[in-house]
Image (cartoon, rainbow, N blue to C red; front, side):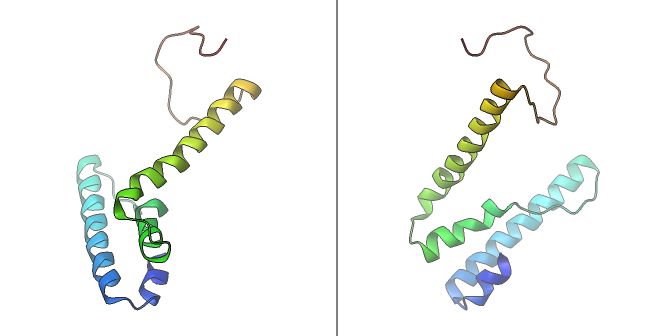
Length: 105
């Protein structure tokens, strides 16, 4: 996605992209220091999709969190419905909360 953004040849956007990339590198460095694990870490597509929302669609920067969360909310709802209806649980984490708790009647 960053290559596509660079191909737009928009100096103001490229300056903003460089700023985002510096933040991404800093986040990766802090993650590696904190976990002690060196990996192939990078930001997900949502981090850079704000460029599409702002430059190509014209949404204000304030809309970025909302657009991100709307997509996530539908994904979480789909996983929840799938787990209730089909008994599928795709979580990679271990549930340690209450047992036998009724979530839906």
